[in-house]
Image 1 (tube, rainbow over the protein chains, first blue to last red):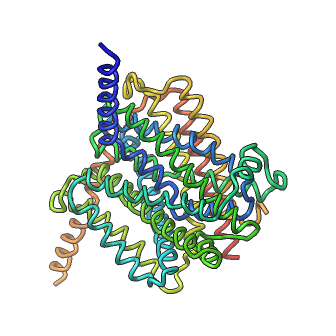
Image 2 (cartoon, one colour):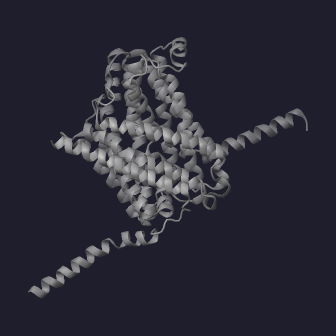
Image 3 (cartoon, rainbow over the protein chains, first blue to last red):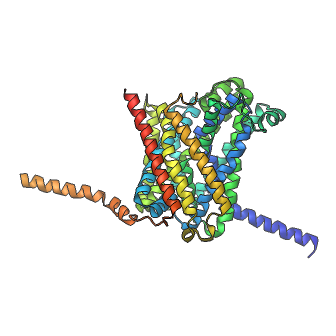
Length: 422
Length: 68
């Protein structure tokens, strides 16, 4: 074979691989980008404003952590063809099953409320009343699921994932210095020394990296997409790409607030957006759009995670490929959670701050169980066959899961007792 | 009159109980954990129970201190 023939062959092979990846990619990228939800954006914005570029290095650790955990859901979903809720019921019995399912439903509902808080706050920057935002979100989310195809839902969600990259141009618009970022942010250190406050920020960053709904969402998503064992390597790449994107977005949010708002106490992304509006209205507007998009992505994934889980356990038809007539309970549950969450945000004087704090506490009751069950299931040879965890995967995931459990528990406890780390 | 009321009440009770039939069916279906109960699995489940008890205890303590 001559040189040109070989080159053409490689090009065709590469093109075929890319096409295959484009078909299979989705669950990993969506779950990872949606991980930077409204709460996540707020955490990164606050971290940048508080510590400048000083904690950028910490973000690099978050990518592999998220990848190792989420990759397990890919194998479990593709091999067992079951969502995480059903897998827990089957393997650990009804006590742990009900505990996980009900805790997931409650955690997801509360988190959904925080996503609506983020979306309404973001749109209020453009003088759009909360009720218009909430109704607009209902319509948009309705269109996404009611068209009756998982594939279409996924591709629309991918477009929203692309919008999440809006923080990248934002960072270039505030003219950050690459040299300063490298000098201050790449070498691991704790600005101002390791104290309770920095520990709180580290916990918050870890707390937003892995959440219970992510585990349930990706596994159910892999099942709904009907991914097979042969697709696992592609889905692993999809998850890895997603973990890079999630770190990239977090990195650029920190860059924006660290460059422009350093030294300010930022408590929410909407507050950061307001502050940025005064400095550069385009950056402020971009941050607000990014916040809305983050809340929206979080909302579409969270509401689906619970609906899939309920469908799996109660035996309802629960695929996005089903029409409303074919899966009435699945869609009823999906829209009920949306309506409840949206309505709560619109109630004047609703305890939204309390809800935001309560989410952290409730999430830490479920997260350890979901992660421990994941590792235990991935070690069942009769269930997983050759896809069971290797020794390296077990060591890595056990260390990661223990670390996540300790830090997220302390984060949850700090929500209960706010002065404990101050 | 009393008989009719009792009959009505019985019908209502049956309907109410029927609503939970699905839950009972799920409980029956998943009554026995299918995972192999190795010492590691038993230890992990025990740790999870202790963890949950501690968290519930903390929540209860917070609730009491808030009320006071």
